Picture 1 (spheres, rainbow, N blue to C red):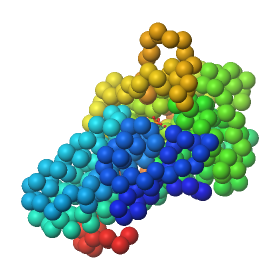
Picture 2: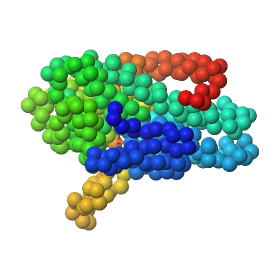
Picture 3: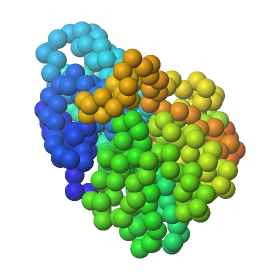
Amino acid sequence: MKFKTIEWKGHYLRLLDQRRLPGEVRYLKCTDASSVARAIRTMAIRGAPAIGVAAAMGIALAAKKIRPCQPSAFRAAMDRVCDFMGRTRPTAVNLFWAIDRMKKVLDEAPSSSLGEIRTRLEAEARQIYEEDIETNRKIGEYGKVLIKDGFGVLTHCNAGALATAGYGTALGVIYAAWSEGKKFEMFADETRPMLQGARLTAWELVQEKIPVTVITDNMAGWLMKQGRISLMVVGADRIARNGDVANKIGTYPLAILADFHRIPFYVAAPTSTLDLTIASGEAIPIEERSPEEVTHFRGKRIAAKKVSVFNPAFDVTPHTLIEGIVTEKGIIRKPYERNLRKVQQTRECLSQSAQRSRRAGGFESNR
Ligand code: MRU
């Protein structure tokens, strides 16, 4: 990729400001947890895995800023930072997954020196970053089989390198198929109101020289009726125990259209997006964002004055409409309740043994 979504720079984070794309490629310098939290809330950085990585790095930064103090005072301060990060956006479970991993480091190092804790937190945040890229490449490898030559593939929002630490989930599937030489047509929904499709997905694909056609969200049904869409692949922000998936607003109607037109609808997501603590999509908290996102674009009013606005940032697609969930562990099929639990169990075993070996090997502060 010709850009980096997020970079750890030791005493600050370098974030690509996605609010300015595609017109301007400008990087933000975040030197503390509150500037990272602001970047997440205002969507300078967005996408479930990317905000998880940013939160983890923001927590590691905060640990560096806290002046030497009693272990209990340090822990209390870090808990405040973690809570603060957790209040940035409610739907993407990757945010809370990453915060929990950082809290686990704090739990396991109560008596360690401040320097050691800072090193461990930095190492864990960087581990989350590297694992995310590796995970997305695996998602691409498993998902590329779904795309055949001559296909028309539609995606919604941006689930690419910009939404992750790198490479992307749904777009990871596209990149893997394209780099294998498959020839297919890409369609990107503009994705109102924040236009992640027209601004970010199209920009990424153009950077990678993959031809893309941008459509407005209300054109998808007509494209499907004309038989130009053979496959849909989208990302996810949270996946419930039964396989219901929360993703960018507008995903649910696309799944219904795809079902009606018998077009396979796939979700690509890392297993860190699984939230098996909730039974179904009904329990997924859906973020409501400011009305200005709907009534204005880039500060210019586009809707009539004196109107009410409804602006949920995500919706939930029932598992019945999802053909498969492409993860770094393979493509998960129905029945999701059983198969997602199996994947989660494997993941927990693996992460425990990975952590044990990391601990045994001591801190990798120079990575
Ligand atoms: O509001 P956003 O831009 O953060 O929403 C992003 C999405 O819905 C993505 O599809 C999802 O986070 C998956 S990103 C790999």
